[in-house]
Length: 140
Image (cartoon, rainbow, N blue to C red; front, side):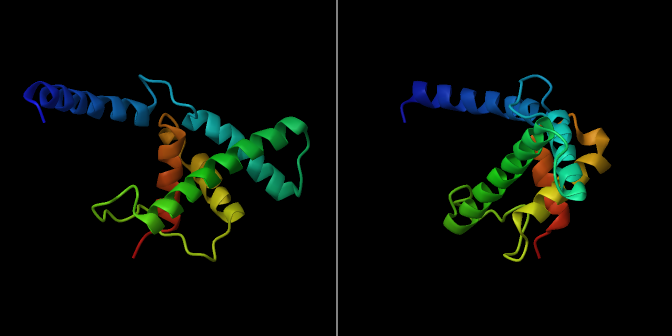
């Protein structure tokens, strides 16, 4: 690498650390799905699961957003684990969900975690999903 490019590369890396922390907290840089928004959507999922259906189209839509968000993270981490894309150095996954756990159960785990931990809702939605899944499905 040329010295000027290396200096630019290192400076960009130094700036990325505080930005990443701000995104995780959701305080400085807006995130697509905040912990508060995800909690609202996942409460609709819990109501629909408990009641065997949805009382309104809005509840069905909110529940679908929760479901899609959590399942998207499950899919990404499953692919990462199988292909070693996200952790080429062999970094272990943060949670270990077995094949017997279905998507509805995993989404319920996340929804309950969001309800039980209101102090964490200031964080980005993806951070809270990872925390919930790590708590429910720890790696050996």
